[in-house]
Length: 324
Image (cartoon, rainbow, N blue to C red):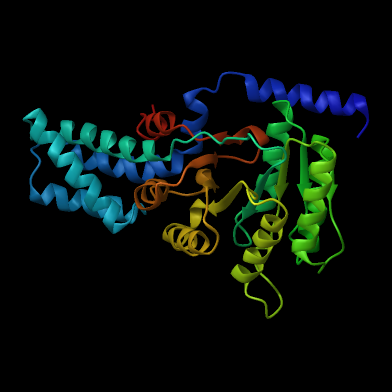
């Protein structure tokens, strides 16, 4: 990338990333979930009646069908009912407020800013094919670069030629070097080479892509464990983070993915993509309730700026806003 093009790209990117993010931007991204979950809830509560068992059962069905999950739904409703008791109220309008507050409290469990103290700080990015993992890595590289971090990328998804090429394109766009080998190369070897290169060059951040599905007899989780072991042998503190990318449109399947990857690798954070494409964004709340893992970013569109740092207050405000 020429210096002029690079400055132009970063100039536009910095302008986009540093401008105040309006709640309306996130509101637009969550419109499908809001029109599904919140619209149904408001229709149920619009009669202005009292909170009784029938109303609670209907609310339970709305939450479950919005992919909050059974256990999370029960916890939210129990919490909301306790809040009503404290308020000494049985008004339907107050029930909406207590549900909103119960959801916000659960999402607050996910607040843990990413610490990038090590140098290089190694982030291993994992996830099944189709979740937008490689694209997300490219957007992360662009964001961190625009914030002044030096970033290197490791093309560890060697089982998909397209993933390697895609990462190289992102590296070109964001001015980040990409360490890659040929298709079907040993993924652990690629990532180790990138680790050694990033360390020798004093790079701040190494973001490593990984396979989401293997076309060999090797089990995916075993291959990912191998990558982690190889890096750990040369730096016991690395990888410093293991982030799982999830596709919100898969609903409860995302919950099972967290379980599998967390048991195998010990996840340190989540990135949830494609929230703009689903009416079942309640899965975000379910994940927060069940795992309390930090949700670092959410994707609400195609642009680099649409991969937003997760803010529980902004998320709940956007989710419960009125579409006027």
